[in-house]
Image (cartoon, rainbow, N blue to C red):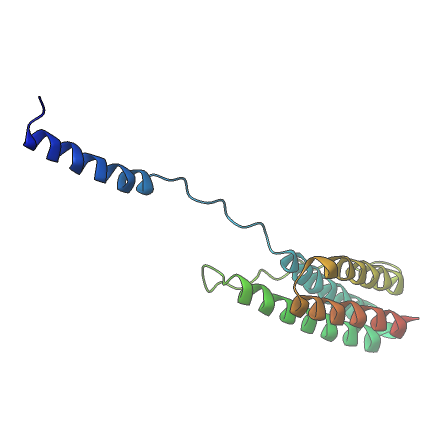
Length: 151
């Protein structure tokens, strides 16, 4: 026969089981990396390349400087969106890209970098929200227009 005390103990233990089970659940997996973060890093690298080309090849200085300024703006806009969507855990800023080697044909290197960036941005448009798609469309259009400056 079960005494009243034993029944109350079993009832109290039964009430604690869901609480203990809730405390021991596995943490959820971290979200995948933001696809715009890669584009922001690419924009910073393109700006560094354009700056290096402007310094090494004076004939391209004006166009390369404009490209560097535009790609820096792209990087800032993309990074702002990445930080808005997923605030960074600390106040550390993104690492600046390493100084690239200056290619012999600066025009070809810049056109290649811009066309790659344009394609990457355009490829992401269907998979993101409307606001982000607008931002990516602007970046892709900017890269396309910068290519025209070089040709």
